[in-house]
Image (tube, rainbow, N blue to C red):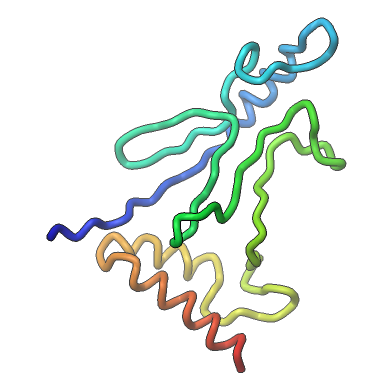
Length: 137
């Protein structure tokens, strides 16, 4: 049986396309996604690029974990037209809900993603286990 390694996927938000799309309003001031607008998201893998207006990120269980939304007709109150939504806890700069998460800074996670090419998902899974063990203390 072959060892199927997961490859890194990058979701790129093209701000130039967002700006271009702002110029393509219909007569009633509405932007019709897909008809008059260019896709603003590029999902890049080692073998291809896919373009779209929404990207769903699946968790290890195969269920949606987060979604990247492009909604120019209904932006957020702050004016953002593209954002990420998730129901999961989010760690920002090594802290979650004001609690420091040792060993779970951005550099650590990125290093584990790089190293996962060599050792599968084990190293990244260990990082999640360290966090869970620390939260139980």
